[in-house]
Length: 215
Length: 215
DNA sequence: ATAGAAGTTATGCAATTGCATAGTTCGCGA
DNA sequence: TCGCGAACTATGCAATTGCATAACTTCTAT
Image 1 (spheres, rainbow over the protein chains, first blue to last red):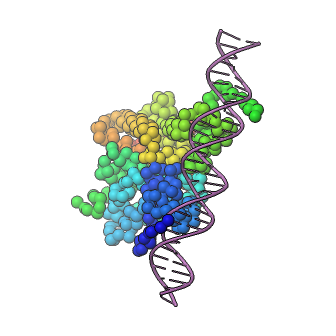
Image 2 (image 1 turned 45 degrees about the vertical axis):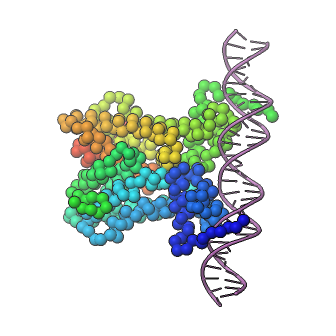
Image 3 (image 1 turned 60 degrees about the vertical axis):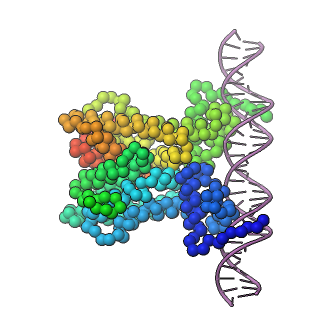
């Protein structure tokens, strides 16, 4: 009966559990993601999860929030990163969206899991709406900056139309890339993305390589 | 104890159960899609499902196959429909992919559910691979025909690159459209899709309206 | 030091779930 | 018409699951 344990010191154990939840969902699917399975992965007792999260639903919602956070990271890095000319910034965004951690098929599994439940779970719908609005907002800004630098100030409708189109291209390429990561070359995916954006905006973008290493 | 029932006559009761499964998944999510829930929706006893399907897993797999079938329908309609000039054919494909039954958010829920399980369930991976290969194959053909009609015969790499890009645009727009069906206008989505394809191929496409009604 | 608060484990329970089994009813061919 | 196979229902069971509870351990404030 001796329950010897070490109390989680600095880092937050909650984060551990959320990470274990994501691992579980990505590995065995949402159906097999039980409280016990998550606890086993996190290396804690199942009771502890209940101690930190009000319910399983709250745990899953937290996992969704974390997923949105992960997917937004490349975008935020570009927005908050060192100030660059608009064209380089947009190109950097495209590259970041299609490579690095974002190109991980695991992320697609997670994303699809939550998206599939948006209609069934009202909490998810809210999380999604907020996250996606911010995403499109940012894209619109990136695009508008490029157009303005070209001397072609877009109307509100034009801004929106371009943002929808470019987001669609990037999302679609991300999807395809993750779905067949073994057949499709990542750099090909990136160059297609850049060329599409160039074609849609009628501009020329600088050549940017992943990880910020420029040629 | 009286178990009065009508035997399913002409139409296949299996199809009923698959449809009920899809309804269930779309409405309440894969987690709440139990054999009993499906049986209730189909208006049959839960034992009957087991009678027609070897296991729940087989039922779900059948539901996935049906989903792929539904999503491929517009594509097949264009491919097998009345022979049209290549440009009209491609435009018709874009329109069909972004409107009609394909634009239903319910379809996105179903698709996302299965996609999210591809990694966890080997059967799904197989179903996906086959279905998607056929899809890309067909797109490549449509595109190649257009390019050939323009007198610009594309190389194998060029064909593939264009197919990936155009598929990505269509998939991405479909995604966005389904995800925010209430905010985004369907016809705007279609016109963006057509303009994107035009930009990517460097061609001009005829104006096509949904449901095959040309203007 | 020491008490109290919070982290953590172990265990149990009622509800659910997939599947099995036995029995009932229907339709069709001989 | 009659019998037999298949469609169908009803019921039960073992395993699982989310959650509750009780007990124990560690940390921190005083």
